[in-house]
Image (tube, rainbow, N blue to C red; front, side, top):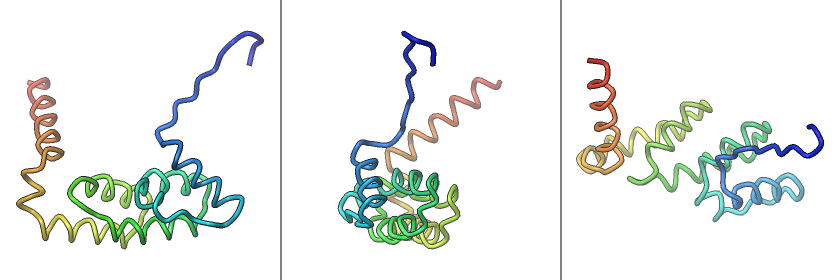
Length: 122
């Protein structure tokens, strides 16, 4: 870094997720409530640091908390980090709630994005 210059690093995780990760690194303790609220963020952070124990806890908590609001993020995270149990739980949730899933605002926005992309290509 050159004197007087400023470097900015963009992060995609919340401060709570980083605090949870640091607590785990320094104490070995895991804040279950933070894991539930920031599951996919913590999976990403734990994978970067190769903290397999934290990844396992995140996957277990993620399975318990899959819902309509987070199922897409859980599914994407499970594919990205090869978490077969979270992947199965996410797919099962979608199958068991297909009507609600297809009419959810998240899916509707994805469908609209796809339409926009297709229209731009024409």
